[in-house]
Image (tube, rainbow, N blue to C red; front, side, top):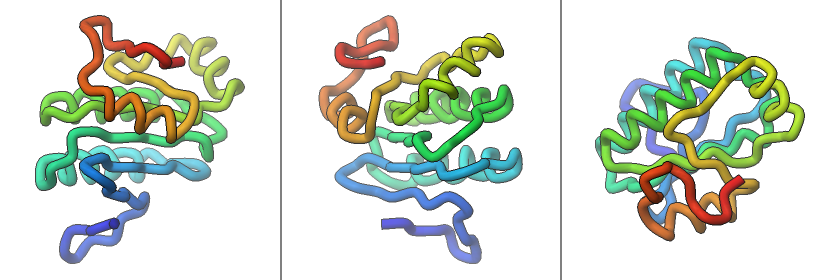
Length: 136
């Protein structure tokens, strides 16, 4: 269920289910929308019982350095608020582009799809290296 703040219309819906926030990015995410998404996710974690965030990027064609940084910052903010973040659905071309650009996503655990991302979050905290068995 998406619950926007009063007087606010979410540009990217954030769904809540069983203590996990699910965000599905579709199409191009402009810089302003990415920053707003970061604020919205942080706000939702702080004002709910969410212990995990799944960000599905299967609908994203391009991840540039700015969006990569925002995704990493979302993971750091979530961790500071006692929630884990899993990025899923990355297309092979997007992964290759990110590697070519030298982008890393510290603090983000990855999974192939939403189902596997939810399984990872239900398994509990990751090990010290920030990876979990079954991650990609």
